[in-house]
Length: 117
Image 1 (cartoon, rainbow, N blue to C red):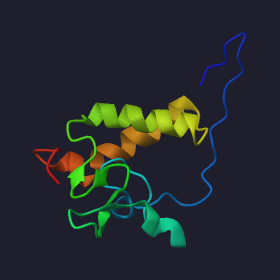
Image 2: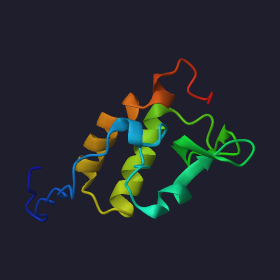
Image 3: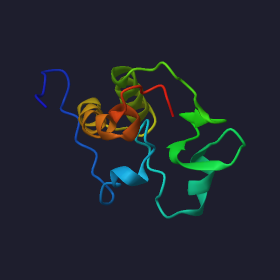
């Protein structure tokens, strides 16, 4: 983070707690799903029969299918960075670093066909 004459450096956002393990994240976007709060269930995706699925969040997976079935890994990283900077107020470089580190390791992106659940 190099300061520019007209803009001071943006400080990194401190992590409030230990990072969420990969298995406790949405396996598409990386959103933490198992944080230990009662609201966790409200963010789970759903199977075709409407029952909750443990692997994906409701923003990525509904009614047994991906909400954006053709999204690419790079587009998912960009979407995550955008959310982290706009909503969570992460500095852009930190959001990109975290997204680039986590998302490619998730099971959706490890499959030969990432559009299949």
